[in-house]
Length: 393
Image 1 (cartoon, rainbow, N blue to C red):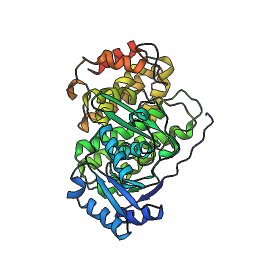
Image 2: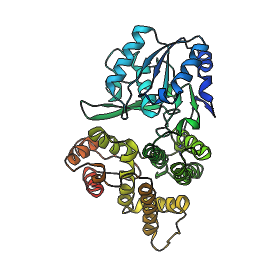
Image 3: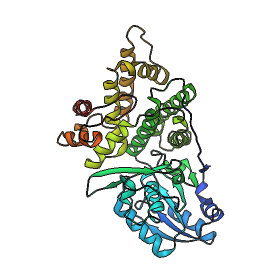
Image 4: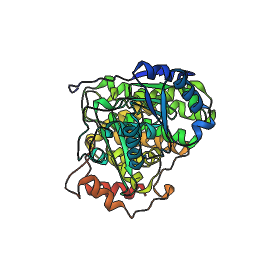
């Protein structure tokens, strides 16, 4: 196990009707003028918008609206939010939605104090400073884990680039999690969210660091929770127990407690950011395509087989084949692929309407035109990435 420092200062408020306390929580954290950020009309149709506004009004808060956040959130809306904050003296950001809404708020929070274009922070031309507007969240889509994480991901649709940045100061000051708010999610969004949660656990789990049993077992638990509860939530969208387990797993799989003391991989997220940057598909759908293919590829590497086999046995209950551990590893891949298909997610790029025309560009972007490798658990060259992409087609 490696040395580490871990601190997560986000206050979690979990339970039915928890959003009704949003105003008093904002007030307690010093808010006066709030920017309320959300996506489309769904929070108004469900009544959530009205409840949140009532809670802020009762606490004597003023607020402005910034609607229009979309999946793979756009830097153009971040820029608009920055201007609203500067022009109106906003001192707090409230994200009501999923990861895209929360990440938009996170980028705004640092961009307000950055003199240049906020895109500089996203692509690491500049580093975030020590000033930021505090962010709070009311989560409606368990997936990205942004409600407790220290990073954000933003897209520029004009450049077809998706990037991200982070800071220890980026974690929201509080997050409200009410599983009832997820009952109306379409099945496809539920499945995409669960695949994202699984991927966050797997990016940390697949590591070459030795003697990390505590975090191995924690990551395995997160994955097993999703495997058990996703079918239940798809069969009955109002299954409170299943929705609660998924919501909590989504938060804890990404606040990095399962990544402490170990080298992490993150190749699949990097690859998926290329795919969704060019083709604007749902993040979870892209991960559903890439992860099983990457596991099959990694199983050809002797240094990766044992961990892949451990995953198959501990997470999926596969029987260990001591004479051929790779066969055990592949059984884990088969079971993951079956869950993905049963959840209605794509398993190939073709199923997602994606062709091979950008493969070379994606591989170049990930490896600085073939001069570097990426990934940690399984080092990937440009040629490796091209081979993997062809297997995903």
